[in-house]
Length: 102
Image (cartoon, rainbow, N blue to C red; front, side, top):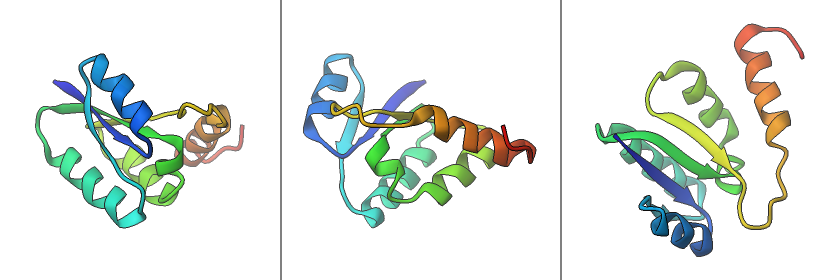
């Protein structure tokens, strides 16, 4: 089982490569959906890491996949700028999953 990275910048990709994690740099919504689909169908990929900016290109699809698909796990990671509100995102996912606002 391995990790795979979907990133919007080369710096994140290079840092992950140093840790042994392969990935791609993409920017457009259609690229995100295409690469996400490919990674999800790769039997060796257990965890897909996605930068916040890419998650924001198609949040409704990512949320649906997280709620419905047991594997692979999709994890949102902040990019090098660190401007993210992951706590709020997690609260939203939990609220959608259980139907109660936290």
